[in-house]
Length: 154
Length: 242
Image 1 (spheres, rainbow over the protein chains, first blue to last red):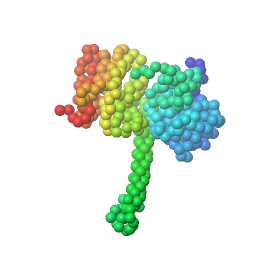
Image 2 (tube, one colour):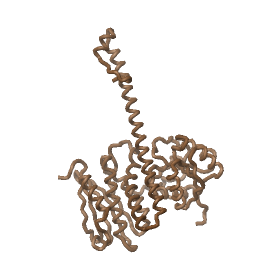
Image 3 (cartoon, rainbow over the protein chains, first blue to last red):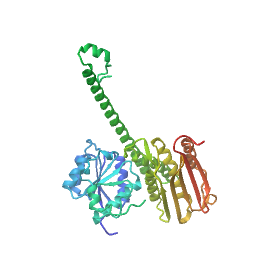
C-alpha cells in the first residue's frame, strides 16, 4: 500500500496504557505522532501536528476533560477524535463531535480492527462494512460513512 | 431514620404538633423520608458506577502490562505462557466490557459476549484457513456466572484453534448455543485431527474447564466428531443437575 499511514495522537493519562497503545497503533499500520496526558497538552499537540485521528480517554490528568478535548479537536482541527472510555453511557449524545467510542477494557485485536476500519472510513469517506465488535460510531459519522448500509451478519 | 440520623416517632410527632389533622405532618415526614432514600440510592448508584469504572480500567491496565511484558520476552515458552494469561484476562475483560452497558445489571446475554470473544480469538489466531460457523441463540445467565463461563468457552475455543488444525490444515470450528429444556447447551466442534492424533493433553487449560464446570454445576462432555472433536457443555439455567 502506498497510501499515507493514518497519523494518530494518543490522549491518555495512564502511561503504561499509552505506551502499549503506541505499539498497537504502529502494528495496525498507523503512525503514532505523540502522546498527551492532560487537556492542554492534547490541544497543543493536536494544533501543532494536525493528526488524522486522536484517541481520547475521558479522564485525563486534569480531570474529566477528555470530552472538551474532543470537542475542540472537532471544531478547530481537521482530524477526528475517538473516545476510549470505561463509561460509554456518560458521553454526551452528540459524542462532542467525536466519531465514536471504543469501550474499555478494549482488546488488542478489537483496537487494531477499529483502527483499520477507521483508516478506510477517513481515507475513503465510506465505511468498508459494519463497525467491528467493540467500536461504536457516533450517529452522525455512521450516517456520513454509510456504516449501516450493509446487511447485518449474524 | 431522618436525614440527620434521628428516628421519627409517629406518636410523638402527632402528639406534640397538637393539630387537628395529623396527616399534614405525616405527609411531610413521608416526603422527607422519600427524599433521603432517593439521595441514598443515587449515591449508591454513583458508587457502583465508580467501582465498575475502576474494575474496567484496572483490567485494561493488567492486559496492557502483560502485552508490554510479552513484547520484551525473548523465550518462546515465556511468550506462550504470557499469551495464555492474556487470553484468560481478555475473556474476563470481554464480560466486563458489556457489564453495565445494558439496562439489566443482573442478567447477562451469553451469545453477545461469546460473539465478541470469538471475534477476538479468531482474529488474533490469524488463521484464515479456519472458518468459524456460529449458531447463537440468546440465552441469559446471572451476571456472576458470566466470567467463569467466558473462561470455559475461551479455553475450549483456544484448544480447537491451537490443536485441531496443525501444519496449516484447513477446517471449520462450529460454536452453538441453544436452550434445551431447563438447561442451555454450548457446543464447540471442530473437523480437525481429533483427540488421539492431536497434541492435546490434560494441560492447565482443561484443568480450568473442569474446575469451572464444577463451580457452575455444568456437565462437560468431549466426544469424537469423526472427523474432529466435539465438546458440549450443559449448564442448568437455575439450580443444579440432578
